[in-house]
Amino acid sequence: MNMQFNNRDPVYVQVVRHFKNQIAKGFLEPGQAIPSRRELANQIKINPNTAQRAYKEMEEEALIKTEKNQPSRVTSDEKVLQNLREELVGQAVNDFVTSVKSINVPLDDALNLVKRKYEKGDSND
Amino acid sequence: MNMQFNNRDPVYVQVVRHFKNQIAKGFLEPGQAIPSRRELANQIKINPNTAQRAYKEMEEEALIKTEKNQPSRVTSDEKVLQNLREELVGQAVNDFVTSVKSINVPLDDALNLVKRKYEKGDSND
DNA sequence: AAATATGTATTAAGCGCTTAATACACCGAT
DNA sequence: ATCGGTGTATTAAGCGCTTAATACATATTT
Image 1 (cartoon, protein in one colour):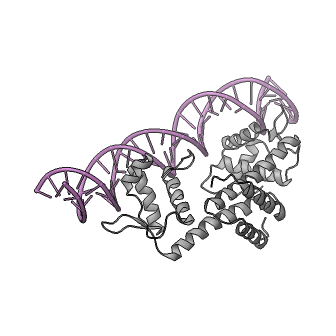
Image 2 (cartoon, rainbow over the protein chains, first blue to last red):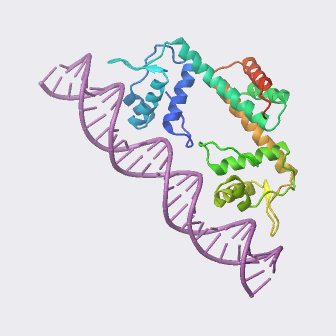
Image 3 (tube, rainbow over the protein chains, first blue to last red):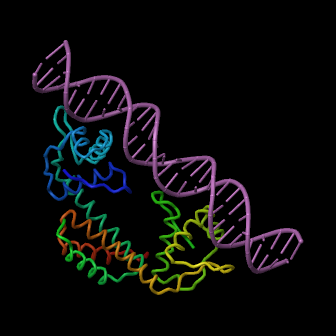
């Protein structure tokens, strides 16, 4: 588990984002156990409450599930997982289109720019 | 001048963004005068210091220029204007590509989504 | 000259929100 | 039964950052 923080966003938000990406990407599979709050806190050197805060968020979004005397696990609810993907992709698309339209960038230009950027892409994904 | 605020971002940031868009879009032309700090503050009901803060930002980025006894004006420096467009577009592209790559969305999918969203676009741009 | 408007700087206040501290109940293992 | 680990809730602390208050010099207008 390696996670790099920036200073702009709250830590717990970044933790949630990290998990969301891992899940959406399939690195974390449905039903898979994730570290306990205190364990995660130790691993990435954050306050246990911050880990709890992140888990609470995910719990509320049903991304993880916590049963008595079991480690928290990634949901197996296919609907939730689908929603997650749509949320992530949809929001990205939305933000992007809103931005380029607000400054009158033609569609084709926008598409070309994305294409070039994507393909140039450093292999560190 | 109509401007709608959200609660997430600081007001002065939103004001700057608004001006940047107006400039990038060509609504505000090079050399064009913009309202005084206090006038803007009145128009959109914000504190004069907040307007000043926004103008200061733009001044530091050379987007506007203020000469003694003249209203602040949009820069005529073509280089700066070009940078602005690149900043706005480039950042949007960058964020988008970073997002979709981080969750392994194939390029073609991403392009299609953008295309559809862009074209569906409500005419309120 | 007085009054009004402008740009600008400095400082204080206020506020929200994150992070930290602490506590409690529960369970499994020793 | 005791101890260590867990999830969870409540409350306090701390911090950064925006916004507000105030002031000053300058210039234009009446």
